[in-house]
Length: 280
Ligand code: GLN
Image (cartoon, rainbow, N blue to C red; front, side, top):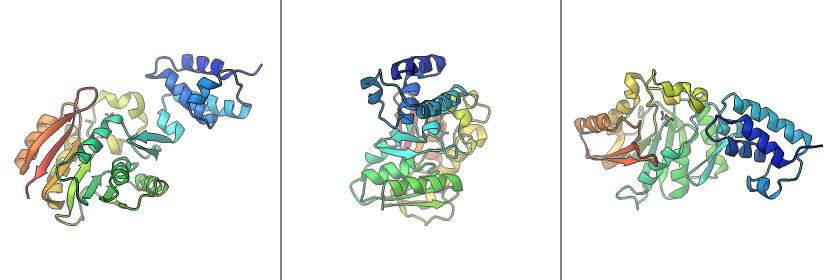
């Protein structure tokens, strides 16, 4: 007899045991293959999926057992209030990064038509979430990866955002001087020898988006220095970083001439975002 949704989920959850979230993963993958929302699984526990959907599900389940991130298997990830297409060219948007959005929306002087720069935009998560929430802001997202840019542009087009431009770029190089009210980045900040790179989703994500030289600080420091050229007077820099990096970043920011350095904590209680004002 054909298996029911309930039976399939029990078996799949067991197959994924040992992972971080076996039941949710199984539900997300099955709902995806049935082209339904996750709630459908609860309201139709006794219905039996067609063979085609079930084959597709078994394939995704096997890939998940091998460790492939759920977001890459589904092809999307929800971030803030938008859904983003993702693939292995980009970092999977994380809940921690929503802290950058929160900080940006609360930045002093945020009522005007701000000019905003997102460095290393990847899927476009930060640039597009801000553009979507502040239609009167003008947002530029840059990335050095052509693959990431192509994806970010598809995301912008699907969200029908008119106030965002996505361009190829190497941090602040070649950008107009003193032209931004707000610069944000979630740059690579993991040290090359960090064991986390060998665990979970990170094994499948682009090293370009994760790993930085100088113990994880090279890109954060490069941004702190080069952003001084593109920030307007009294404009803000917001950086996501590793949970032990705030103190070194604060020291660097002050030595370069930034003021009002403040840190924000993520939901796990870790220092995760540092903001600072460029006095010009
Ligand atoms: N927060 C990510 C992680 O360690 C790293 C993201 C990044 O390097 N920007 O899971």
